[in-house]
Amino acid sequence: MTRTNHTLAPATARPTGSRTAARTGPDREDAERERILALLARASYAGIRDVLAGGHNANTSSCTAASRLLGLLPEMPYRAQDALAFGEHATAVLVRDLGVRQIIHTDHGFPLHAPRRNAHEIGQAIDAGCRTVYADADPVVHAASRCVLACNDRVTVADVGLADGAHRLLEHPAVAHLDPARPVAVLCTALETVPDAVISTLTADLARLLPTGGYLAACQLSVEDTRLARQVDETMATALGSRWGRLRTPAQTAGLLRDLPLVQQLGVVEAPRYIPSTYRPAGPPRSAVLGAIARITPYDASRAARPRTTLTAASSPAPTGGHR
Image 1 (cartoon, rainbow, N blue to C red):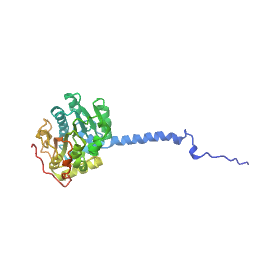
Image 2: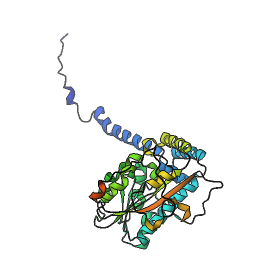
Image 3: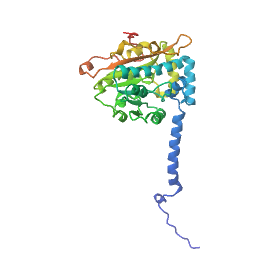
Image 4: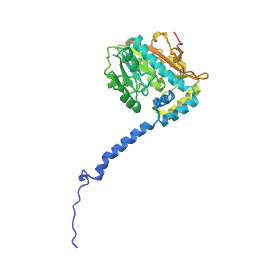
């Protein structure tokens, strides 16, 4: 028998139509599909607040986390409504009373539906030229916001949150359309998602990065009982991981804006105290949404030389009081 020698083709010389090459595209698509499904299935603070406020955007994981949170703070549905009410109130004050026409609403959560109103709806009802940037690092919230909110030519959406730091927020391309020569207001209705490392330098960073000044309107879910706060933090950290900051006491919350002049002498107060609301807990609440609107003064190099006290978990600055 005569043996025939066959020359083997190099391994790299496979035809482009081989099954190995054909699997490359579908495998990549499958991996992307799995990534998207994982994002859609995970719990988010936007979803937790949405279900607590009576919305319909929460998935199963967020509903489960909201149920656990309710076990610790039964009044959380009222607090979620308080945070929304503060956002509406602050937007109206910024645009109508303070003349702001540029707002960055950070960590805003899912777009609101009637009877609630989004920041750009409130602002543009007062002045059609009002510009709004919605900034949220949650990719699901970001996608929903782009679908619902970005149809307005004076609204943009950014995939960054305040927890990423003031620098990343204000340097994001979506913020580039804002006029640097005019005041900018930063609105945050979920300071509990912002870590201490960002909070401790927030006011100084905003003053440095906003050369014409502006405003910071923010509210924080606060509890006086530090043991309860630790329980809530552990529950939320389990559900959200690094996407959770921490609860703060009223005194610590008041200290967050201690370096800024407060507008209208509101101080750091409970939102229902100056926002008409029908939502009231049945018994004495163990938590409160504390909010304030503060003026951001332009950066002054002489002020930078003064020592600053860093807020830590162990420190509790003296409260500024409800009305000053």
